[in-house]
Length: 482
Image (cartoon, rainbow, N blue to C red; front, side):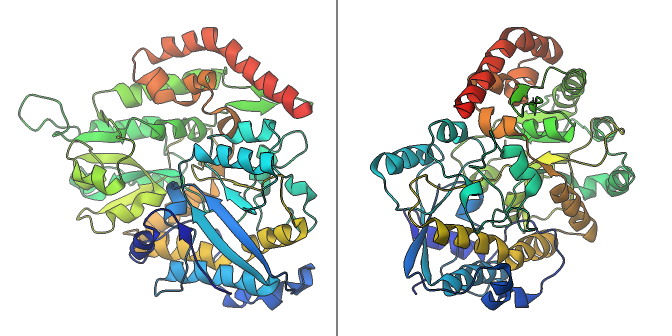
């Protein structure tokens, strides 16, 4: 069978850049290559067969899919080799021909799904989505196949994320899922270790280990380093305790603070949960953290690449050397591989020390299958095997690429383990995150903090927007019930 990737962009250049960097998380320290043998899976009930059928995956030109999911040859890079061998193992076990189409934006996926269902099209057997865009639409429009109906998909196995899948479940159905096939993409706090040493500040790694890495502690350290460059103007040329872009990075503080957008009632239906005392406390703390004089917030320019942002001096990321702390996406750590700055990686701080561990959300995508699936047995087996054969991919991403190639010290690898082990899923993000009313809460930075008077603005949003959010959630619950 011919291994290939079909792409409407310059995927070849993406794969070339993959050889210089790497991709995702793995919680297993076992790199036993015997798992790569398809015969090892026979005992689970999926015997070798020869379907002689295509298995095509659709993904948007977005996030992790552009760099860390596909390979059409083994190359010389450890990540690329693991990706290639995973797909080859599934092909050989089932006698299928896997291929990939990477095209369009995150907005195009729901449209593609609508067209497939309307025409009864079975072009794509697996579709990879955004973390939010169009998910509730595809569910309520009944475009997706229920993973519970796959005979050969067993979500009790360790290669499925049971907590994530339970969170995403709606009305007893699992239309959007997470397995080891899906690599996570959380945000993290980068720390300039040179500035840390210059000011003889506390060891943040030990603060994390002791459970004392909180927003208050972070602000205390920030205040020690903020310095004007002497021109009397506070702008991007000065040194700050924290620098961050103004987009989704601030959203992750919700989940690191132990706050939820939604919860479930006794009937398993979603209910708005953000109107809580802890949420108000979080907003007050973020007001101090993000609007204080020790923080510089710069605009993210959507559509620009990470390389283009780094070339812009007003985009004060870690590479500029003018911040003690900087917020970044873990999947973009490859940008800092050749940066001449000694840096470390930290989880988002807790809201307070009473929290049990460090938590964050995943900004990577999800899996779904069009309702028009033709051969459900073949598709279910392929999806199960893709998850099962992902151990070496995850090891290559989390342990080798992130843990060894893209970090500067062993402590950062330890912190990455804490970050990935603490990933949580809030269905309020997946199903309501971009809803106009919920967005006023979920996008805390642009809607609550940055406009000023965060606490008052939050209270105002609760008064004016909470009814609209609750109506949206209730409508979703009713549509699911139908």
